[in-house]
Length: 305
Image (cartoon, rainbow, N blue to C red):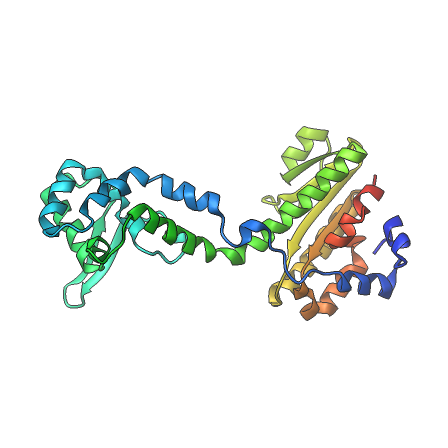
């Protein structure tokens, strides 16, 4: 670890004191406003099928559901494509499915329901009705069901979005680091690239940076046109075996970059590092610049330029 003027100002120039300061100032969590629910995405996903959902609202409270269902699909066969959005799915990977299988009868095997195209045939309309009744979606349309299918889908989307929280800490970390880098870039008059691969760095500054694998994209590349600083970021709110592997990966990446005359900065944060102190300390001792958000915010990046 190389001390910076910021470390000197804080009275933690090197060794144990610098490491303990780093650990003591780790954040327990990193929750930006969209950590809870990304409402922009929720409304965007709902808006894509809002017209179809409003047409489906015609069936709410209808007495002869089967007959009205067939009449509605005859006039608007395209609305069948919105049916998958009425089913509470199990996560982002299944968000856009349009062909659904169901084991309706174990002796008969699986049934396939294709909602990828309009229901222009009696068979496709009958299959859609079978699905709606078999899954229980028909209860949404009954008198004691929902009042508006648009509102119902908004609720479904909000619930699905909350399931994605575990993936947001990394994105939030990049958002916070980007803001701090942009602030430093404005005051120090240097440039930066996000998700920078070897080609993008060369095109921007004419600098050929080494990579440890051909798919490598650095979180941030920062340069004043002469000096290049590579920055990788992550956040770990909890422990796990991945942290040890990450520490080892960045030790190797640091050696690769610094051996070619470039600066490498690892900005990491999170209470998860308390569970992996020894591997993290080994990486801290071997990598020139290991900072958390506190140190980055104190101006450590400025001192490299």
